Length: 299
Image 1 (tube, one colour):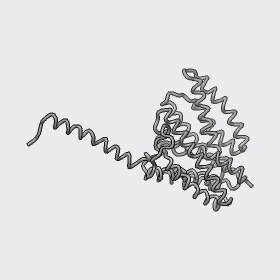
Image 2 (cartoon, one colour):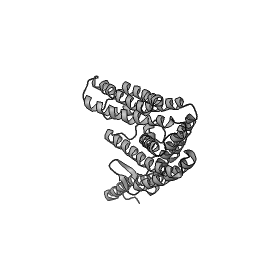
Image 3 (tube, rainbow, N blue to C red):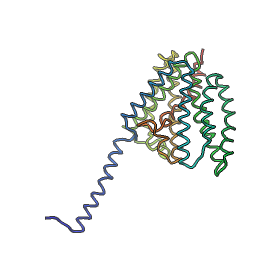
Image 4 (cartoon, rainbow, N blue to C red):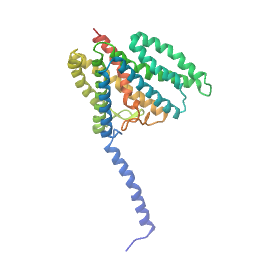
């Protein structure tokens, strides 16, 4: 005998409404990291292999690859900023993404600084002369992008200039990957205390501990066997890299939150855009370059 009373239907509807909420909550607990681990791992390993192969080729090839990646990054940033209502001078930024790495390769750090200083007024004029509303805001955003991508990204080229440049680039990439991987795994399993909930809710202090531990292990190995500079130097580089990588990750999360976008792009399955994968590396590269220049300068 079926009960067709309004109370029965009301209770059934309420129970049915509760089911999706519980299911969504359960799925959230199962994947705190927010990324599919399988696809993310495949993409990450593939990128490491590609970069490793490029490091075995002449330095100009690696410089060209860096410039190409920066061009892709500029393309992603323009689209993301456009969603937030900000118009960037696309042509000027693309030119900087190609020229700055080439200048870094041919002229070194002094040339890179000079090229950046020359690019700033070009980028500013590129936006201010187009007219429209919010020109000043857009011009300032364009200089931020110029510093974030072409300038910081060119430090990968500076790392590759010495005779042991391939080992230096490999070290910063491995340290950044260790920071990201350690934070991802430990944060997904044990993360309970958010590091910066208003910026990146999924980044936890437990994940940061995982980043530090894995970075220290990889740093000691890189210092001893890759750089031939000793495990103590490797530990120092690991500390520098994990702090810089975390800051880079949080900085991109802050920009995405301000723009109202989840990912900078959709180029890499499981990772979002290219910038969602290399945001940590962009800040870690100059930090490690400075640290190496102080404790282990090129011979």
